[in-house]
Length: 166
Image 1: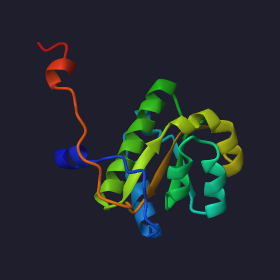
Image 2 (image 1 turned 90 degrees about the vertical axis):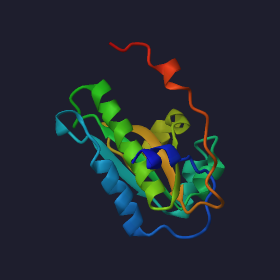
Image 3 (image 1 turned 45 degrees about the horizontal axis):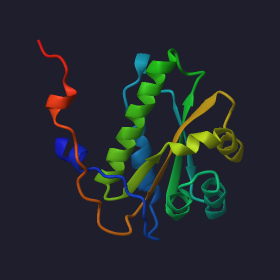
Image 4 (image 1 turned 90 degrees about the horizontal axis):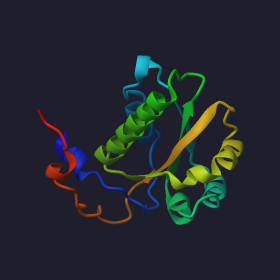
C-alpha cells in the first residue's frame, strides 16, 4: 500500500482512449468507502463525459486544457444536509478524493484533483443541476495517461515534520 501511495502522481495530459464505465464505477466505489464521521457518507458525485459539457466546464478554470483533455470528469460535492460537523465532513471529503486518486492510479489511469475550480462553484452547480445544499469540493480529471507517469517529487524528511514524540 505504501508503494501505491508513494508512486501516485498527478497526471494532467490524457490520451483519447476511452475510460470504461466499469473503471469509473471502481473509482466511485473507492470514494464511497472512505471513512466519514458517524458514517454519514456526505459525498455526492457528478460524472461528466459529454464533450460539450466538458468544454463548458473548461472555460471555468485556468486549467482548461486538463479539463477538456480528460476522458472523464468527476465533480465531487459535499452534501451539507448529510453532514453533522463541517470541518469533519470536509476532512472526510479529502479522504474520499484520495481514495479515488489511489484507485485511478491502481487502475493504470491518470488523474488530478483540481481545486482552483472552486472559484467557479456556482457556475459548476448550475451546469450540473446540483442541489443547493451541495458544496463543490473539487473536480477530478481522469483518463488514460498521454505519456509516462511523472517522476517522484521531493518530500520533506520526517525530522522536519514531526515536532513532538514522547
